[in-house]
Image: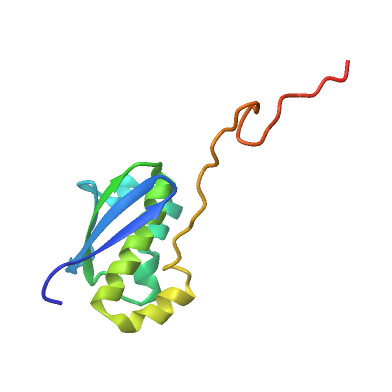
Length: 129
């Protein structure tokens, strides 16, 4: 791998740009260590999952620019971006990443509020009398 590879990840309103290069496993999100940026352990596991799937923990340095959404959406968008960048490095990893469901862009997002409703689907309480 001569140059760095990049991948784009999206989830809900979050968008992350991931830059992958050879290194010793340092993951940086918005100029912070990912363990400081994502303090919850399950979010840290989401970010590490693509590397654990292909048994390459500690072989790549990752730089992530995350914007929009919340921490969970950014963590899941980072997971997708890392997976897409890893495919650019080695196309033979695609079946393993695909089987683990890491290449699927989760299309779920917040439904908009409709007029005449309290929320997107919740109606006001009906009063017969």
